[in-house]
Length: 200
Image 1 (spheres, one colour):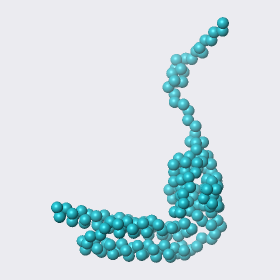
Image 2 (cartoon, one colour):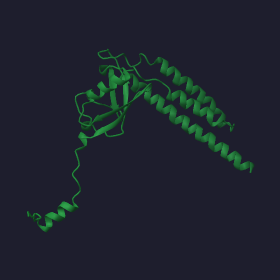
Image 3 (tube, helix red, strand yellow):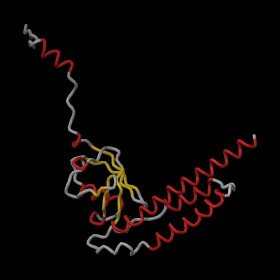
Image 4 (tube, helix red, strand yellow):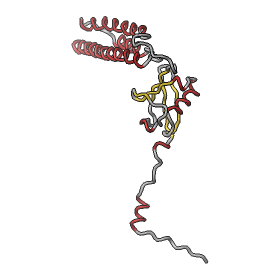
């Protein structure tokens, strides 16, 4: 009869083999779930961290019918380089990547060109906010819905197709208007609470 002897391991090595956690595969080999989103559409992509940004663009092209060369992908405001891998540029599982559609090879327009309509819309929203702020200053009751509508108007502004310089021109204006709208909304809400407290 054949007998098998258990291989001898030094006590320290046997403890190490029992206590040591299993080795993990490097992150860049893992499949990641990425959401690529513009103001008009969203694309969910499953891709390895070792894939390049260009390969991600090709996957987006298949799902969204937007040519890879016409895509500009951004993570936290930073443009991702086509030749670098996703893991090299800090992309992680469940990240949301901004998609901006630009025409490949198109010359950039001057900063003030193409943004006139957006600026006009922002100015129109600002005038509405001026009217609401005047009512609040006069201690008049202003419903929160009016502020919500202004914020929706601002949020719905479409920046796709603009150059980087044009977006940089519009974004500070939009940000400042959103901040002011939030402040006036808070004042109106505080006024309503004070009025309700006084009536009790």
